Image (cartoon, rainbow, N blue to C red):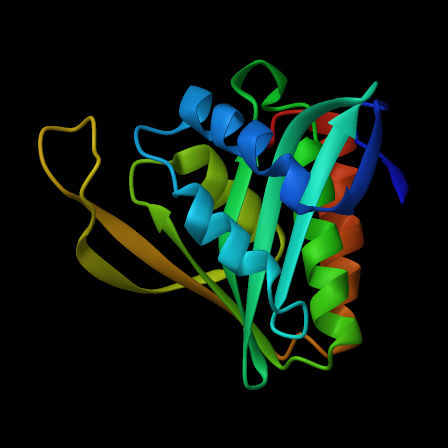
Length: 183
């Protein structure tokens, strides 16, 4: 599926496949202090009934990926990564919107995620989609640049089946197009 990022860059979204694992690990190594193992990534591909794994490409180059885990009737956003030189171009918004639309197709009732408390741009992006802070996980991120484990902010979006949620998704894409300051 091709989407247009708010910066008007054509972004091709497709399911992540086994042959993408090395490229995902390389992208993650450029963005994160620690990465998942190839075995873990491959295990995430084994059950598409409970997982959605997407790759974002621009001009045939992988520029991001995102993953959603389904737990009963809720979705857990477990990863959103955009290449450092492509951040704040709307690719993160496009990836999230695709995950959220997938959650709606699956009939999920709520979404959750964790984000570093220091990652203010990501927190703002999630809030634009309607996520609200719900708690803190102390020391959740052991791989921190802040001198020790970093806390995670737990965020939730409830009642995603309400048409207002899809309106927020569409509104987040529209606002990002005007601002081009998101992931």
